[in-house]
Image (cartoon, rainbow, N blue to C red; front, top):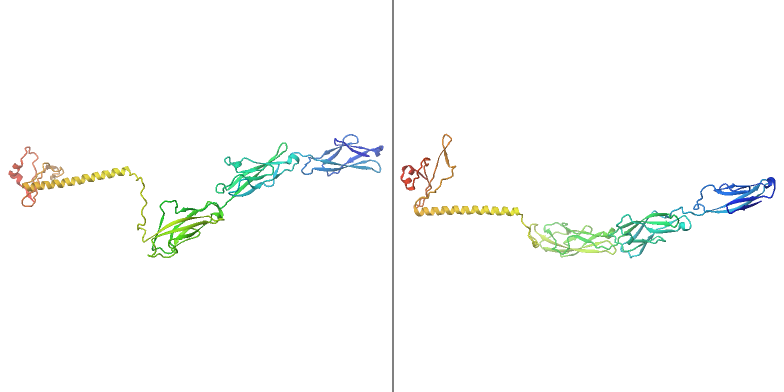
Length: 438
């Protein structure tokens, strides 16, 4: 009995005996994903039970057993190997779904900062992987000018020096693509964290050190020890311990009079003040960070001891070159007030001058000065019936010679008197000469 295996995966079995002794059957183990299916007389075909996965088992060793139906049964075996060919059914897989890489700021260009890696379970070209940077989600991020990736091995280079104060973290995606047909690919997230370096000195916010007039702090001489004089405020552009600041008094006009708290920059008096202490003091405070190596800055404070805060202590800075413009309404009000005041003063002076002039003329002539007009109309008499009566006319006389002044109040003028009476006739008429003297 012989077993032959054809190239078209058909098996032939032959037995030279006759009758049942020449009849044969063939089979393979049941645990294999294959079937030995009879086709025509003494021919068998090897077929699969289910889909094969090369990545699960790339080859199979199969033992085919053929027996006859004689007594006793004779058998023969034949071994074949089945190789499972590959198809591109697996995409590259990264070893991690995300990568976190670190780079210190101020790095040298073309610095290797880390690598990504992906594998493909396929074989041959289907397993060959190439790497690339994927377009960033932020279109304004200049990713191509910051990092690059080696297409063959996935190594990542910072292309230029990074500045922590400008960019603390950089996120982007990388792709891994095989060379199968059609090609399959996958992605991974890469996060690059920029580590801070101590490359920023402390910056003083108060007191200002911009070259302008120095700010002077006032301290009363009655201040108790620990009196808060001022506070130095500073910041540092770095982070972490590189931004931790400490303060110390570097120079002082009179050592031991003032002190600086190391952690908050508060400047306080260290003892009681006395009249023997100088009035003006100059303090230099050093601000230092905790970086390695530490960086520092200095600030100058001016302190003036005064007896009271109302005491003038320094000349005022020069006035601005352009005076502030006054409010137009205020100008109009001032002009109106000045005009009214001037008019009132002129009226008073004119009235006083007229009175003095009349008094002098009356004294020189020994007569009376009689005003020509009537007094205001509200000086009227009211009769018992409640109606207005006739008008009154008064005559004021200043008598000279004796050094005394007399006022004469004339009797009322008859309203229906049509003719005018001269001054001489009034003096001669007994009616008008009836007057009272004060």
